[in-house]
Length: 274
Picture 1 (cartoon, helix red, strand yellow):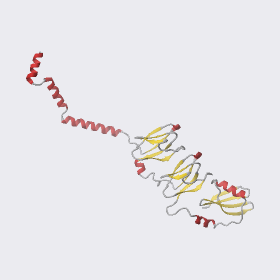
Picture 2: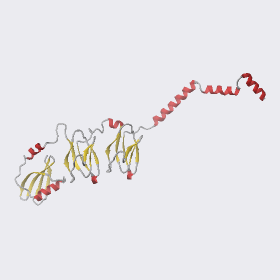
Picture 3: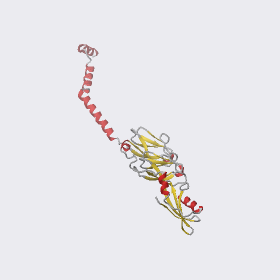
Picture 4: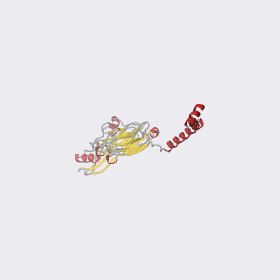
């Protein structure tokens, strides 16, 4: 039997089993079958990628109990903190940062983060925010407040005893303002056609108020204490109203207030004039 197989192999010039195996492989690898395999592979990959959820361009991410947290997000291009929600100041690469397809927050940072179309659409350009806001640094910590910051932003009214000084304990970002170190105030955006009045304008307006007397120092102190601006206002006028009562007009920045107060320092009313 072995001898016959060797003869057949020598006569045919090729192993009949090997010839059959080679023919089967050729059938499996015809151009038609290769094309169908590629089509199936392409359809499978397309289905898998289509099934993946689209990553958001805006997310709210919070570090709960000072623990690290990650939030899925589209991180292609620029990623920016557009609104801080925590008392803890969020600082990039310190307590928040960007991964390949998510952002991370840590040590108490919480905020709203935006990227992609959310930033490019102009939603955070500052145009959508209010022209006037009250922003407060609680426990002397940094806080950010959304605001339209186009043009110049000024302190319209200081509300804290700590004096708010620009670029020291308050400042403006692209679409918000920040306060720190105990600053609390009303901030306003100057209109495009106007601006903060000059010192000469303020002096001319002050001169329009007449004084008919001199209020006791206790009355002046009471009005300043009631205003709670952190510093004493400029006395514009002092007028006796009735026995034992005075109207004292004080100016803080460019704004004036009428304080009705007794000679002993009892404030009856405190109203903004302009």
